Length: 264
Image: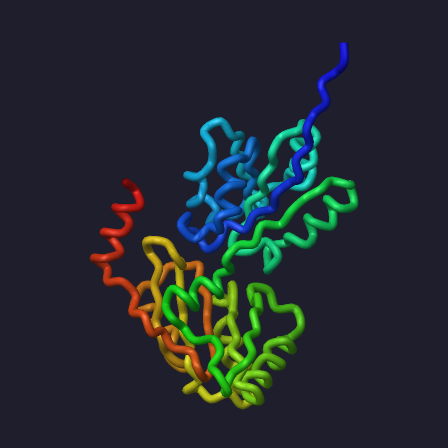
């Protein structure tokens, strides 16, 4: 009796976008709905789990917990379920190839001879710019955008100084991810490099979710404005001469009503 040949499906590394399931790409939604196994370790991905089949095996790996002494290897799990002939989806917040380690996982899968695909997702910077109509470039004035992650500074702010020079010389817009803990130092470095305290800054938070918020200020006052609005992390910052929010954030009452609708 011949043994039935097993089908093998490429592992799908899927960008979950900023959080709102409505902002998934059509292909991402399809892959999530078809998944036999869904793996994730990013909390924003929780909001798109409503698209997962009830028959799917959904596995959360808390790989960011500093108290965990032994962590499960995400790639090993992907390969394990791939070898069982299952449709494996690995969810990543935003876009998998931007600040999310998608390249590392892709290389490991390639090394093991496991076929895979990357499904693009909307990054936080792209989402924030669109949701609040924040111009991050301006025709004939600003033709560059720098996306930079700033939760851990190891180069004595050398990269931040380079960004400041790009802002001054070319009116480049800087989009800062995970920068809140270092924000005072980053802004101080900007000023040391010649960026004025009146440089416009837009702070956005909880993008695409019920608590999303946005406020416009400057290097000098953006933090005070954020505190006054009691904004909730995660935050993203747009810094540049052309940035401003042209869509006002929802009022507190509108936020509550939206949250109720999302729960229904």
